[in-house]
Image 1: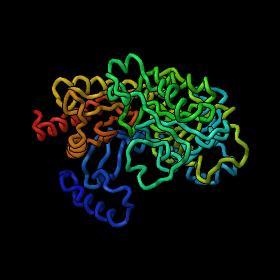
Image 2: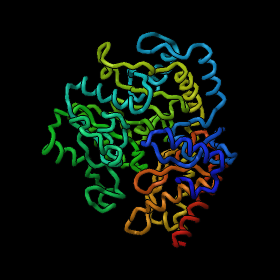
Image 3: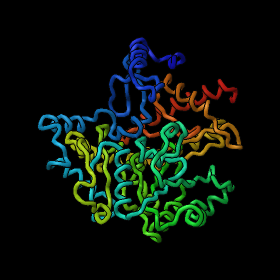
Image 4: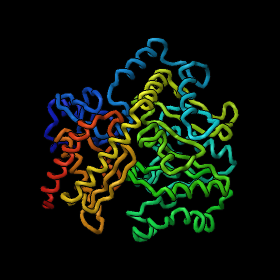
Length: 446
């Protein structure tokens, strides 16, 4: 069984997992052996009564923490009024108010908004919009990226083979290129050379546009300001700036997939702001409504000028989700975004301090923006990914009362709720270090 080595998993949790094994899709097996009962803020409890600190926020979704009273109140009040009416066919103010707020915080103006159900759906819509606006067929995406699992978004995704294997043919016209990562430069350059001058942007102009696809046939470049599933990779600012310059030069649409990085997680509304870059389209979701399903395509008004009937959905802009989004945006704006910057910097500094006495962190790549911090565990100076030990660390953390997720080959990610308080951060880091020490001891590294 998948939970044989999990000490905290009690009888109730085991029984639920055994039932789950009989009916749930094999595509989501196995999962982390934690069976949630309830949560409050940055703490959660399993069905057997065990308490945990949440350092992953449901894949960076529970931005205001679990069951924040203001979010619960907003959901309840809206549900008592009406739950659904179909926002692509009828009008209702709560949907409009979300769109107005998103247009207000957009990095460009005037902006227009399309509300969807998920991050994947926003990516699909952004692809359609870019092709419609430019009249061009080709899209550029990056190795290591994750944009979703429906066929269009999956065509952009290049994180793991298993995510694409068996689903070909995918969307034609998608071309992948290296993403800036000096720690593991895909062009084979030394880290110092790569940091001095990123070749990834040059590669698009000097190789892709000369040998594979003409720039005047490219509709969009789609990028993550920080690669999430790819390992919490933070690129050099110059790389993102190069993408903007390439798009300006060739009249290409620049699409920022801010599904995970947006809505205050990095200490700013949009992670792209850290690089001084303004995209043409933003895809947002995850933390937008504190766990209620919603996504948003935010675009320059000129770009989102497609005609009536060209795009729509049934559940997008659900009124209950919109009510939760409004409450979420208010909380983030009035303190949680600044808290993300402060607590994220504290986590980053703590991980850097751990380098000196933890072999798996000694040569690690530690990067982060706000409460989106990653540490790529490696076993030696040659940067050999410590994937098995990372996986063991995730399991050990559960036993020590910490929910922690992996990313990439051997990274762990720190993405707790944006409201997390300093004492909880400190306690969570203590549980992390305890787990890390136990794994290193078991592996004979200490």
